[in-house]
Length: 232
Ligand SMILES: Cc1cc2nc3c(=O)[nH]c(=O)nc-3n(C[C@H](O)[C@H](O)[C@H](O)COP(=O)(O)O)c2cc1C
Image 1 (cartoon, helix red, strand yellow):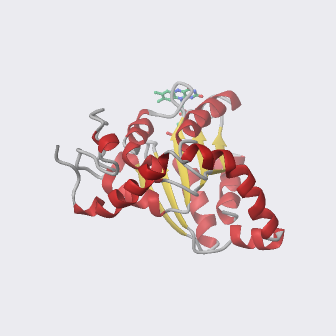
Image 2: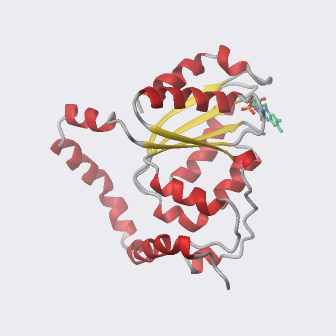
């Protein structure tokens, strides 16, 4: 089966190490809390804070709303402003502007990790995801969970999901309802991010009670998003 291209060569090499390490993963996961505990005793709390707020991190925002004046996307922009004010490098990808096909379920990526039989914009997004220090996943709430565009995107991360590690992750959602809608939709995103190794869940930005576009700016979440970006 023809698999993706030279550009994925480095990713494929990395993933073969990944597969070799796969059997060790259970042990590593069991040890992770102890290792994390050791690291925090080695670094003083001041040094830890300085490292956490070090400027120049790479931030990748994945924004799934198709609306022009979207609430969840407005939270992304506000977060981006805050992060840029702190000297971070931010890129936002609107999924509605990308060419992303549905996963065909062929399992080529399981047999040949890092590769995908589909040739579209996902190869470039894979590289950006691997390079990012911080990821923001933003979606409108549709039927209590992420929207379809976000789910199609997530399925296409399958070729590299075992290689994604050590990321800080933020979530941004908008809904017409209240906190239960926020929780169920963020939980649907966490199922995805929990499959990464070393992920830190850093915060949720949420606009509630908003059917209409453009409502985010009047929400307390708008300034919270700036502050979260500033402190990322
Ligand atoms: C197909 C569809 C399903 C929706 N389902 C829900 C829902 O289950 N719960 C809810 O609170 N809002 C729901 N909404 C409302 C949107 O979440 C709300 O309009 C939100 O502000 C859209 O975010 P956006 O501006 O970022 O696209 C739904 C909207 C659409 C179009």
